[in-house]
Each structure stands twice: as structure tokens, then as C-alpha cells.
Image (cartoon, rainbow, N blue to C red):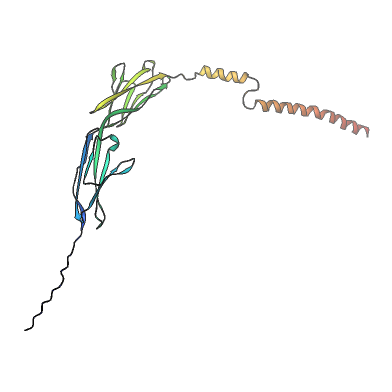
Length: 252
């Protein structure tokens, strides 16, 4: 019996697998100057490429193309979200983010003195940047000012503190110290509340009298003189004309 063998060529099927991030670092909070290590492990076929980018309010920048991201001596400008992207061209890239919070001690960005008349409301402001947010305290002559003191009010926000004088008196004038602090340190600034003179009623009255007595000063003074002169000049010019008309009428 005739027997024939048939040999068919074997085929090799290569399957593809979409990328998947299987391990990524958790959000972290770290003090400024320390080192940071982030991990992003991805699987897929073909093997995916892992890319890190820094997402911050100021810019979005490429950081590295590796599963591991190392940052030496991190600064406050390097805080924000770090985005890990895994891509192998089989499907859309897979993206995950890690939030990095950088803690730093306070620094006072603005503290300005102000001038206020007696009896008016006055406000001293102190702005400070810090992570975690700063706590504020106010001092005068090494004595801490507390909330509830008669005539004085303190308003605190995460980055701003106001010392409000509801009715400024003579003894309120002077130098004040704003202290901003958090767990990493503290800083302070000196702010002055000084007296600002305001015009009195007698001064305003004197200015009005001086203006009224000064010739040729004040709105309408020139036009009034001009109009009066024009009227008088007009009357003098019409009188000879009337005499001439009467003379002609009588003649005829």
C-alpha cells in the first residue's frame, strides 16, 4: 500500500500585550535637601518603555526614561506631581502619578509699615511662604499680642496674617514684630505703625479763604471779569450811535 507523508511548515504566533503598570511608589512628603527615589514597574509585550515627567504649576518637563527615578537634594521648586508613562505601541500609553510634597521652613515675602491717623482703622500685614503652612504671632516690645485685646484683632490665613487696630491711639504707634514658624524653623520681620497727619477743619478753612482773596484765582474768575468788561464796553460804544440817530431824525 502506497503511503505518503505530508509535512506542513510550522507557524510561530507572537502575541502582543498592552502595557500595564504593576508597581508604583506612593505619594511622599519629604524635607527639602533630602534624596528621593521613585519606582514605576510596567509589563507588556513587547516590553514597554517607561518615562517620567515632572508636572508642576510652572512647567511640565521631561525627567528620565527609566523605571527608577532618583532626585538628589530635592528643592521646593521640584515639588509637585511626577507622571509615569508606560508605552509599547500596542495600545494607548498607561499613565500614573506620584505626588511629591517638599517641606521647607518659612520665609517672609512681604511685610510693610503703614501710616494711620489717630482714631482711624489701621492694618499691618505679614505674608510668609512655608510647607507646612506657617503659624503667625505678633509682638510689640517683646510682649506677645493675643487675640481679644481691646481694640486689636488678629486675622490668620495659611500664608497671611493681619494685625488690625480698630481705633488707633497714640500708644499704638511703634514697631511690631511678625513671627512665622512651622516644624522646620521660624523667621521674623519688623513692621512699623506710624502716625499720619490728616488736614484739620481750620486748615481747610484757611485754604478756602486764601483762595477767595487771591485775585484772578479760582474757576470762573477770568470769565466773570471779561464778561463785565464786555458789557461796559458795549454800553459806551452804543451811546454815540443813539445821539447820531436822534440828530438825523430832528433834522428831517
